[in-house]
Image (cartoon, rainbow, N blue to C red):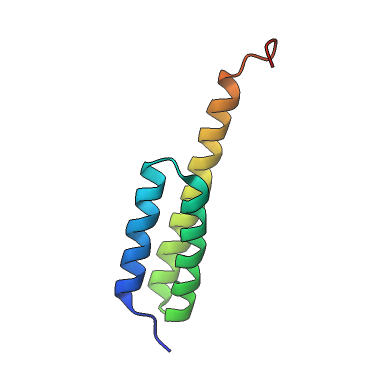
Length: 77
């Protein structure tokens, strides 16, 4: 069964809004659902693009976490 591309577009939009509002947990869940929908679509181009986007999202989230940890003063922690 082919996945509707409209559903994929809506998930992309929701994931982007979640990232913009710093709801990283929600964005990660949406990315996982998006990746699942991409696998169901069996379209190699969509799978590749969403996989790359998910990897980039994880990198950005890791960088944001490191920035937050660097701001914490170890003496006060």
